[in-house]
Image (tube, rainbow, N blue to C red; front, side):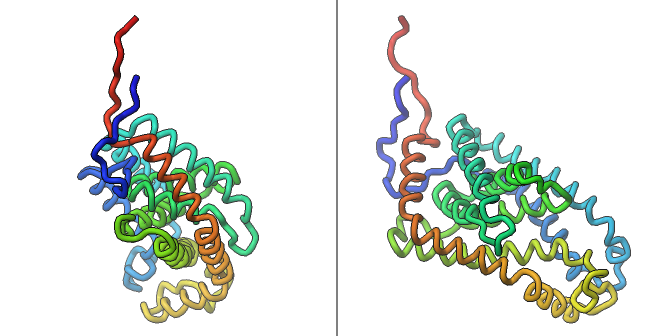
Length: 282
């Protein structure tokens, strides 16, 4: 067996272990729409809506969301023809990310796995990024015992987080320090966005704990928005800031080496090149 040839490929062209096709985009759009509804229903449903009257049924939405997430991953893999090299890369990065998460868990939001997700999504593209983010969060939940009704939302949010890095301007336009600063800026903002959307998943169910900042099904949209902002500032700002700063620092300090390693691995794996067999049988 001879290594796949990459002759004629532009050196700056991004390798894509998973390319999203029509079915994958459709599934991703569906699960994202359900996710937006699941995260944002307190702001989308009118005060008199029956949704507010059945707020405690939301965990069933989590279960349905998890099923849709599995369908997205299955559609992505089946349509892209995910090969063994991409599966191996996915497994290594997901295991590394899952191992990094407990390092700072419970310590001011210091979660080094986020910078790995940003750089991986950057190099391997949005399709691989979404699958990697979801699988990594699932694996880390198994590792840390964090399985619960919040897990599907964590998987979706991390999938969005990692996928977004794959949509940033390509390496043919930005390289070197400019690329690192772009990734650091994205990681900083996305870390806050992740914390905010995860706050939305739990905020409607804490009315007994803090009545002044909890979700009020009878309040107007501006009033609930003000309550939610106050809730975020009071409960998660420190965690989100810690996560964002760690992501920036790690990206700027070890990002160059990790980007080179990931790009070298994708070039050697040659995900998009057909494997050819040569030689004569003995």
